[in-house]
Amino acid sequence: MTRTVDHTSISESVHAARSALDRVDAAAPVAALPLLREAQQQVTRALDEAMAVAVTTEGATIRAAGQLAGLTENAVGPRLARTRLLAAYQSDSGRVTAAGVERARYDLEEGRHRTSDREDTPTPLRFRARRTT
Image 1: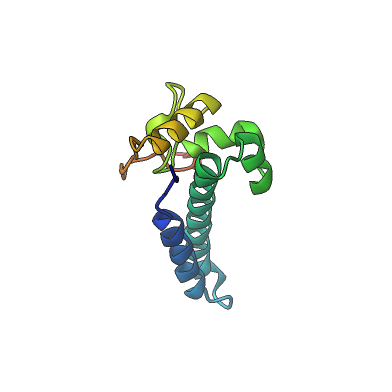
Image 2: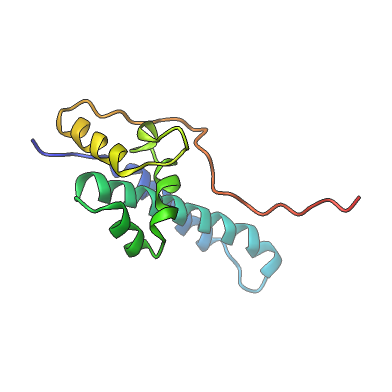
């Protein structure tokens, strides 16, 4: 049976990143900062979704996907847990393990794959300045 996966989330994130970058005016760095941050977040989302597709349908290991993305193996699991394709397969610790990937592959082949359409998937950690008052 052929594994088919919807690549829409990758395409949408890439399009959103391009849109943010197109609005950047290098002559106005202060105004450019939020747009650059938005583009970075969208590229990160596209990268995470692409890693999820790579490990489920293309046979890549978590380690190999991490290497291709320039990440350590330990950084990949939590990022996979934020994806639509693998969020339903995360462990109690909030990360996707090799066992979760294997289960997702099996479910995909059997036509029982569970996707997560949650809009409240955790976003990457962001720096927040401490208040000094």
